[in-house]
Image 1 (cartoon, helix red, strand yellow):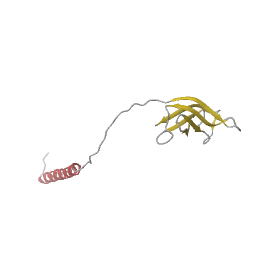
Image 2 (spheres, rainbow, N blue to C red):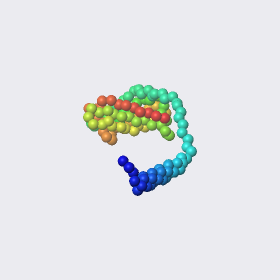
Image 3 (cartoon, rainbow, N blue to C red):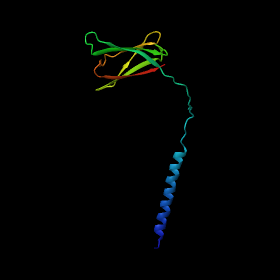
Length: 133
């Protein structure tokens, strides 16, 4: 198969175009700059809390409803700042429901209102406490 002069010129032009386009692409990628940043890692020990004296406070009019949960937690969770206690109530149907709790000024007695949505004794299967300082 012979290549005539016109085909040779076409091939040379195609190669030149490919080189120009490739060089332009390289020029754009070579000009990226990334600002200096800082990254790091660290570690710290995480100890658990002990929950005791869990008490279910039933509604006086409709005792099938649980209006709040109270319990003792150690070590103390600060009642201000970053201290936070949340419970998750697992239910036999629907849920789980999450409730935000408050601590007393000592940070050891926790109260969790469970009326919104209303927690009922019939559907409650377990309670998970999440606490953080």
